[in-house]
Image 1 (cartoon, helix red, strand yellow):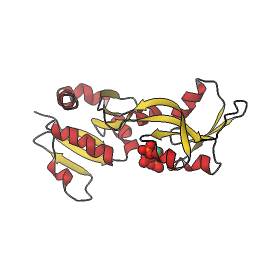
Image 2: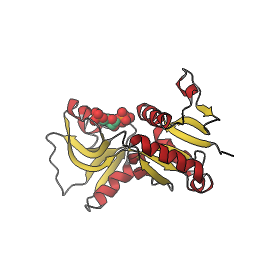
Image 3: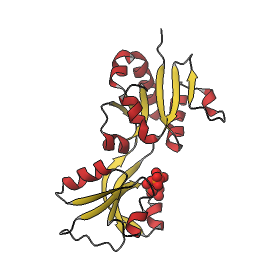
Image 4: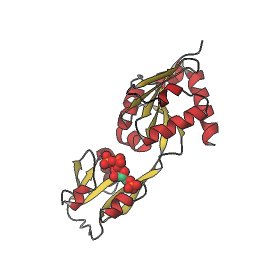
Amino acid sequence: MKQMINIALPKGRLGEKAYGILEAAGFECPSIKEESRKLIFENEEKGVRYFWVKPSDVVIYVERGAADIGIAGKDIILEYSPNIYELADLGIGKCRMAVAAKKDFYDRRDRTLRVATKFPNIARDFYNKQSREIDIIKLNGSIELAPILGLSDVIVDIVETGKTLYENNLEPKQDIVQISARLVANKASYKFKNKEIKEICEKVQNIIG
Ligand code: PRP
């Protein structure tokens, strides 16, 4: 008998694109497109159950097995280092993690650098490798405000088009890592629901080419 696969999708534009790929791969669930506040959608015949979660929570659901598979950004994977499998790069949600600062920012390397970010582990790793002393200021959004208001010297954040930086008189100074969305799996699920998960992974890979 076919086992149901629980799939955590990140709420928002990336999740909708990711669902589009799964739908094209033959794992559609039409009720997901109906206007409602429901969070879980199931297509028993196809063996899939989708649910929407906060993008940064996908890896938590997958790591703990509440979801068998999910779609997570590489930024979230690098930040939380969850104990999960990364099965495929979906090639969507492409952006980069970068250091940015005010255009006229001059880095005095003899001073502790104040870094505002939603990604303290990625930032710490990056500066550790350069033996640079930093003071992390963990924020939860609108990171670009920090250097403008003098809360930090630089930010470590996602840059997609660069528009947010540009419109706030900031500029990227250094790239840290390229980011894209990944298909991830719970380790035990990958073992016990191997046939089903492999089938989804293969069909998804055929769609993304
Ligand atoms: C992300 C990121 C930047 C913006 C970059 O913000 O933190 O603010 O997107 O995109 P751009 O280079 O195309 O302008 P997000 O929408 O996730 O909101 P938040 O960080 O303020 O929560």
